[in-house]
Image 1 (spheres, one colour):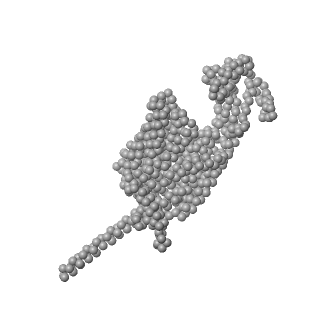
Image 2 (cartoon, one colour):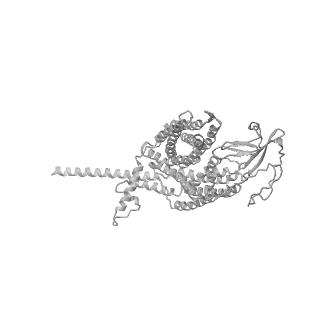
Image 3 (cartoon, helix red, strand yellow):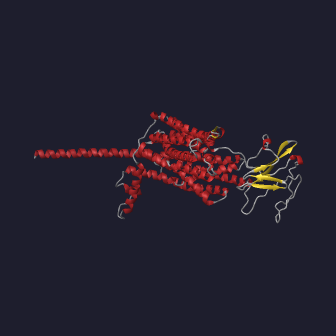
Length: 607
């Protein structure tokens, strides 16, 4: 029955990442938003998806239970996808209708995906007994692989559906959003199909309200207590006057884990820059390809089947928190590698002219070497070479005009007059219909070219001039940083997912999963603060993040050293024995009272 949960997660992640793969392009090209608004809405949606898990966890643990929560919020998820797809159909209303439907769909998707996110992982963990720890660890590894498999396939397929399939005379965003909607329907159907096989734990009441009230009562009681009052072992013990010892101990367990989570957002601050900073770095390099999702599919079985067993043979105790700390170190090393790559990439990039300066390009079509003199400046000390082409009277003349003004202009060159519309490039002497079969040759990635079209023997010939040299740093130099970051992700993320489940009391497992997901949301907030506030060069920013994570790793390691593992199963046994002892005490008291009553009755009879 575990396969139903894994397939459900695969389809759901395909649905989510497939929709996000074309979301920014949809904002830019379909809704005609600018880059700033598109980026802001995109990140607002992503942030909402990681803050809503708290809501889903509350509904699951306090009201509906995990199974029903997944079902109901998946329906909300599907409705959101359908509305989003309808909003991408050009014939449905005007632009305002498209925007309204898109925003409504995204809000429903955020509540759906965020709400089920902590429940699915916790529900999968519920299917295993405490004695099946190794099997549960393997489940979380396979579960994480399904996430990345869905991500990898969707980010390849949905952009193809958008660009290669045409509907309504333009890119088919309706289909690109419709396929993820269909996959989410499949995910819901698969999950429901395995319903009779699942182990379903009932909800435990409004647990979060109890937790908040208990913490508030303990603080209030401690604050109002007199100095002569007996000391308590833990500050939560001040709530014993009103709340059960079991609830107090469960809250203590959760708080210990949540305190341990405080440094973790820094890892996600580095990890999530794969989709922003590292992608921008790749655009300035030679070639481009996706690595992380593919490497996850390779690394998870390698770590589970080879690396971890080999480390165990060396008699090294691989505790979860040690794995997570090691993952942080690998992520910091990945950003160190990214820094080295960035330093070399910037050498090949032409910086824009500073304020008060300009870039001047001169094309020599004179048929001989020429010298260019600029008054009071020696910007061209050497003669400019000719293109080495024979420009005869029969070759036609070449003029190129760039009009950046909002209104058209009339130009006079010698006896010739030209009308140049705004934002228009006019080529005179070469008809556009004759340029269909031009072979421009191999164009290197990152370079900027100007092609001059001339007639030679009645044939149009393209003469290439390289304005900006091609990037000489190959994209393959990004492989080491992706390898290091993926290794860190396997040790940090998968381990943290399983750790969050194992350390949570039975009635708070979804809540703690939501707390784990909140670290991702706060990691993205850190990126926004540093990126917007620091104002550093990119390589310095990479180095800053690497240093911050190493510092956080030291703090986390110290906290992990003093951390005592929770044992929710042992907690159940202790309080089960206590409840039995209380029942035995009650039975003894009842028997004693009955004997007293009988004795009293006997004495009164004799009297």
